[in-house]
Amino acid sequence: MKKRMSMKPMVLSLAVLCTILGFAGVGAAKYPGKPIKLMVPYPPGGASDFQARIVTMLAQEEKYLGQPIVIINKPGAGGMVGWNWFVESAPKDGYDLNAYNVPHFIAQSIVYPKKAKYKIGTKEPIANWGADPAVLIVPRDSPFNSVKDLVEYAKKNPGKVTVSGGGNFIGHHIALIQFNRAAGIQTTHVPYAGGVPALVAVVSGEVMAGFNNSSDAFRSKERLKILAVADLGRCPFLPDVPTLKEAGYDVDDTSNNFRGIAAPAGTPAEVIAKLADVFPKMFNDKIVADKMKETGCVLDVIPRAKLKEKWVKTEALLKDMFKDLIQE
Image (tube, rainbow, N blue to C red; front, side):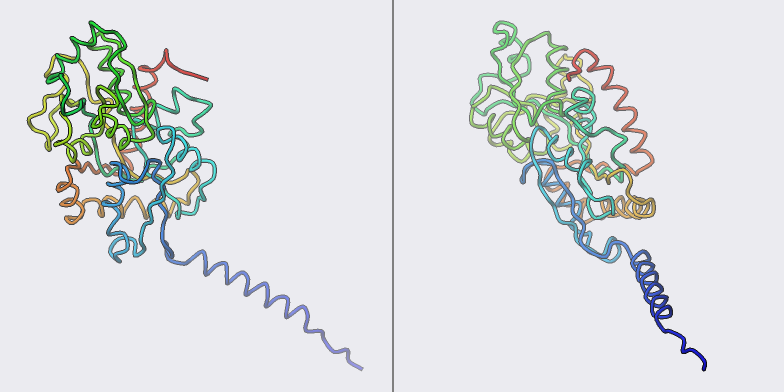
């Protein structure tokens, strides 16, 4: 009598086939298929957070990503808390991106090689959306009405001038280091957990001066005095404010804060390519550009290829600048 063939192998084969097809369907699914998270390593309300919300506000439109971008704030240590989390824990599937600040994260990776778990090789640059030069600010009722006034006082009172900034070895701090060297003065750096509290410290008179973002200072210009810009040219939103070079101090644009979006190293190439194509177009959208201009934010869109080159050049420059400051 003929033995009846068991159906188990066939059932197993179908199960395997379905599993394979199921995974193939997931792999072929359109990216992105759900909202994307963008980690900003600074507090809500600051320039990085404020601008990140502007430049991503059109992400859900079908001509861009077709999905919204949700901002997640992880502030602390001048960005170090958030960036450490990003390179150590963020998934590499394209659904977790981060807002970077250059020279901030590159400078920190050089000066704190053990504390900072990130460097340019741990992130994939996608696109830059803007530039925000540092400005030297003082309280509205300050006796300093010019850079010269501040320098003369600082020379007579070494270390007495307190200067706030949004963290150690970020653009604000780099501008102060350059300024101190160029002016031949000694000041006391007072780092805060982001640009907003650092600016509030100046407005309230908690510190005597500060280096902060030009965009934040622009929106608060009625509450403080802006003495100079740490850049090669004047800020278009502050045309009456001289550069430090114009004031007689050799400070260049090294501290200029470039902001953009990066993915974790190891993110699939096709995802990187998709984002690198979409983000520059979205940043240059007239709605985004008009909103940036309206709020005193400089739009400076740099595509992925040129951005990678910029990171490498910035790292080389900062390694030379900080060769005597490297810590354990």
